[in-house]
Image 1 (cartoon, rainbow, N blue to C red):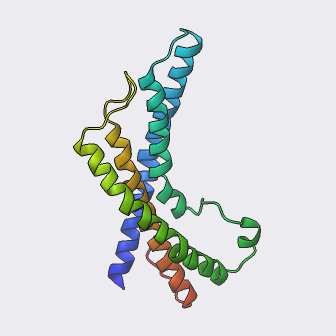
Image 2: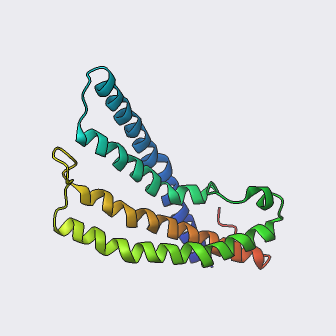
Image 3: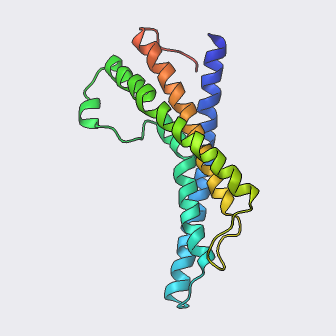
Length: 174
């Protein structure tokens, strides 16, 4: 039981750190890239393919790396009009079923398809098809399985915590 508590604390700590440090830094970079693109386009009447691609790469990074953090803080979309009215055990049941019926299978599908895809992209040194584009397209492809792995870990933690709530013995690991 002590190992489980430590594993949960570690997994949540990783997602907390990534959400606060990594994603926050990436959001600042995202804002700077967008600001630069706007200045280039409207002040200097020019644009660069690299900057446009960088914009959507950083956005994808923020979205993917922040998924586990968002799940940790219960920020994912639910039908809150019903969920908010439920007691703790009913919420735990919804979370438990959601994790094991939807989240784990979808993460499995994404991970099993994107890991080989990212590996091949790295092996061939995939770059942007546009001249002047990002020279390392494989980096963003590697973020896809990493983001889903972090969300899977947080989903497993949510499932375990929900299971213990359903048993009437919530985990106290603080």
